[in-house]
Image (cartoon, rainbow, N blue to C red; front, side, top):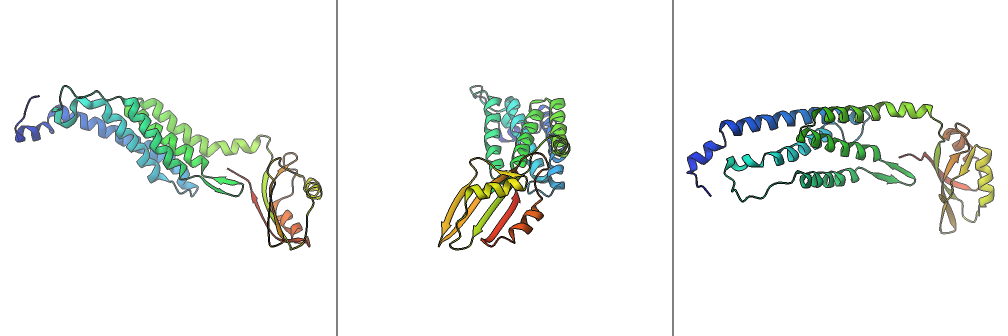
Length: 251
């Protein structure tokens, strides 16, 4: 291995080929940052925890890790040994996807039958893929992916509103001490109000003589069920119910 004096070693980092490579990497990083900010703006606009800064950083960092793996010949001022092992970009990409997967998992929250954060987790993972595409030089594909991600999150909900669907309501009922509800009566009450208890969703717990029922009520058909305010008003009139909680079961 050739040895360089300290002064020559320092100058090698500022040689023409090194500066040209650094300039190309900087342009890739700026492009990845812009695309990440584009996708993150939609999340930020809707008040999500992961906004433009998160998406921009993830996309840019993914790009950086990918793009440097393609220039191993100019690492360390081109002073690396000829015996240095070649870098496999696919292993770098695998590490990026795994790491961002943990970041996305931290954004998924569950409360009862309601799961939130799935769209944010999926989109932040897609943002890292956008950065990888920029890093390997697939600029058109990266731009298309970023635009498609933003379009899906902005406009797909409007398309879903026109498609046949049934609302699902997560219901928690806490009954007064000594009151024993009947499942068949509960199902009939739900049916009279345009709902049916989703199969396998019913769970029953008890504490000090009080029973608590939790289940998901699914509309019998599109827009056939009563609204949450109407259900709440009726539940207030039931003598056996001590407290209740209603929410849309969503993800």
